[in-house]
Image (tube, rainbow, N blue to C red):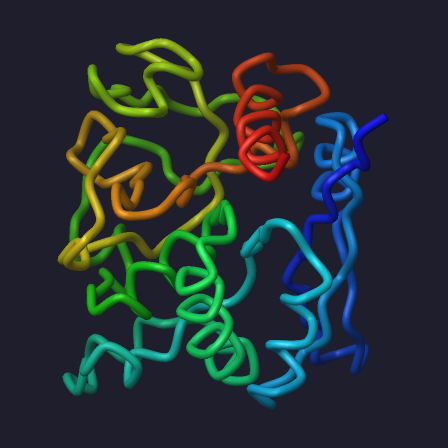
Length: 238
């Protein structure tokens, strides 16, 4: 019987409690899809991260705080001031972890901040605050219960996401105030919101490198497309 693939999950950081933690949905969704989730260390030690990647078959880059605008060359003080809490430890970790995972061709799924981090690491930029910089009638910052959809995205035909969940309108939950501005070289868009905000990307050069702006870790228990996204990750690892 084949062994279940091990999926490394980037830790969440709580400065107030001086702790690393994990939303159960990330682990539950991976387990349900047939993988074995493990939380990675928060580190910018390249050797330590390489060793961690030796032990896993795939990677989930989780949601979390805003990415430091310095990482993508944003110097406008007014734009920088629109950011919320930053997590420079994760910025430093992901700047090493993501390229190392792509070099190994490890399957990778980015979620919310994970989408933004992937884009920044590969040379893209972000909007610092959608309500101020790109106002629209689309609600991108939903309220509890977080598994409930708050808007639809248009899944583009011919993309891997369309093959997974179907093309066209897909209801999604949403909890973010930043988003992709300039899409990084090498990434292609798989879904957009009605206001044009990029909601999903993939990297054609990789065996499996997807990232979504919404939160399938919250909705997987009640939403089949969310389950399919995690299943696609785990299947790519087998």
